[in-house]
Image (cartoon, rainbow, N blue to C red):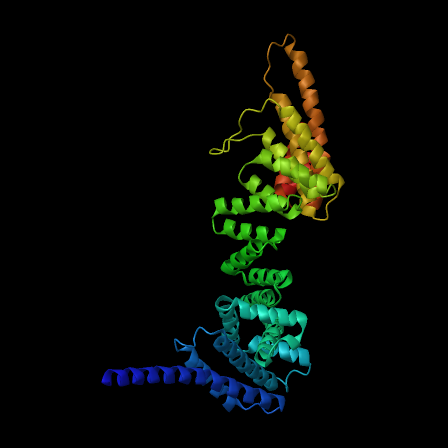
Length: 450
């Protein structure tokens, strides 16, 4: 009989403990409701809010109530109410210095500590994991109308809706204050809240998070947020390009190329990704792959002088191969003359398009002049095999080479017009004037160089 009494006593203690913890949740609800009433009256009483926080924190610390969605829902509302109060206080401080209401609010968001909002946001994620059905009820209520929700569900739904708006405002405020990492986080949170509330993919806010992370030069955030857009299948070419650039800067070229390949597969017609890949091919010495990409780029944008200039430059390099270690000239390729012709055609097209960027135009003039000069030298130094009339052959070659030297001069002169103090252009011209017998011009150029 004594044992029975003892058992009943223990059961009574356990029941009392459980009721006490449920009482904490009830206390939080009552205090939060009282606080919300004082807010409606325009006289927020923080005593109620502090009491609600104390009660809900005790409930969250107890095994019996810490995993209940209701407990976390109250914690979200309490934390968010604390944040709103902090923002309001900050806004009031700015009333004397900032007249415009919108600017004042944005500035308040930019200045306010975000700890309480962070807690509220985290509680939403916990509820999503703990009780998806509760969120489904909220989602249905937002679609069907408030009449399908009870009082607590409605207050929770309104709080989260307001959090979404406020999260976007915080993001804009932090961005305005040039706190770009915070802005990135809050654009991202806005996207997450939208996704949880409406089962929709908030492309705009996720994209804004990527842009803000880029402005912050925060490589971890750039990778995280751009990867998120790819994972949830709302990616744009920009996302692949941003990840590629960061990975390449980190020295992880293999991962960068994998990302670029995926991006090119997803967006085969995107000119930005195509250009990035072409740049990589050029830097890696994969000139034939670069040429294939440039052909596609020109088809998409036939008025782009830069594409023609780079194409000409590749043909130029292919026609004049060098040893990678010593940088010495190697033997000319069998298709040398075809490569020279392709380089000439591309440079002429770049010049014809007259690019706004004068650096491209200068380089096109100078490189074309160099192509003609080099071809003239090639003719002069070409190996002689089984020539019956050597004197005649040399005379013909000298005349042909001279024609190319003369052909080079006007292009180098135009290059010098664009860069009047460029020594390499002046040296090339001085030599050509001497080779073509123009002693007056050669002396002028020599004087300029002095």
